[in-house]
Length: 168
Image 1: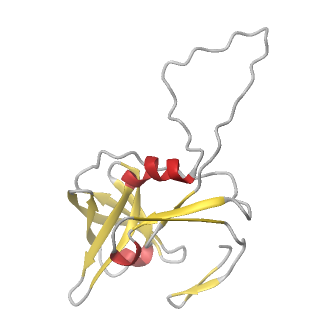
Image 2 (image 1 turned 90 degrees about the horizontal axis):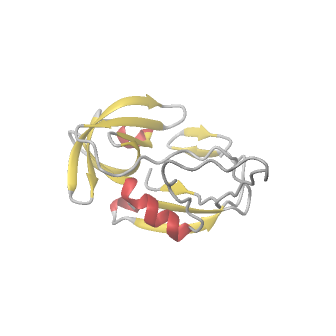
Image 3 (image 1 turned 135 degrees about the vertical axis):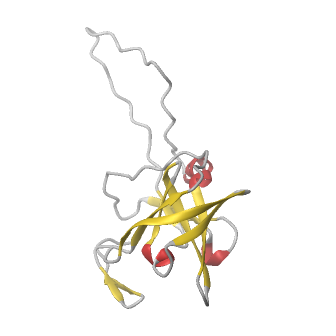
């Protein structure tokens, strides 16, 4: 994809009954971003530019780490090539396509050199109309960009490169 969508989630507080002592944490949990700016600061290091070159073409797209050596991207970014270059800051490494779902337009690539950034996790709670969201990515092959907005509809259907995507 040209961009990756992130949504911040508010920190949740739980209460412990007075009769049972609260467990002592063995480590500090990673703070949950509560604003889109905090989400950008926390997550932008996990976004990579994928550069793909074919016999007669060149293209690029964005991907995001789910592990130090695994990148998720739109399937059409890697559809015509099984390899690409992944660029993160000043680090460049080889990315090899290891999974592709044409119907869902999603691909998984393995990096030759793991990157030091953390993998992002998928949000499990459903989004609602009005939820704040943002995209982080290399829009149209440019520099890393950030665009804020809100969910403005659910269950949409669109045509993407001759394929109909539903329930967007």
